[in-house]
Image (tube, rainbow, N blue to C red):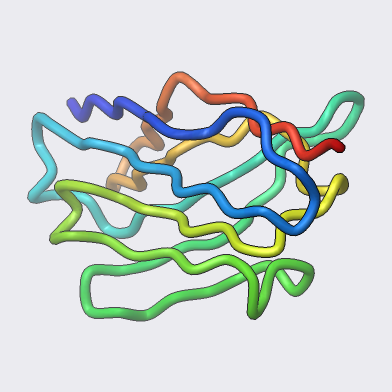
Length: 114
């Protein structure tokens, strides 16, 4: 069992920055990878960025060069979001992948608007 608690997020103007954090507890030693997903109104949940503990990161094309994912031995997961745009508005979710199960954080709204 893994528990994920998110923090950060909120309202920001276009071009601004936010940093999302996710604290993991429980059986973190069996985590295979962690990721950030997002879901905009009326759209399916999509993968934003993923990472492994040895630094193998993958980013969605539309966030390359703007978002940076990082982890501290799977105890914490971070997402630094720079140059945010209105199309980045969504609920963002922290995710941990176990061999048999995906765990999810509670989700936090990020709104980019002037």
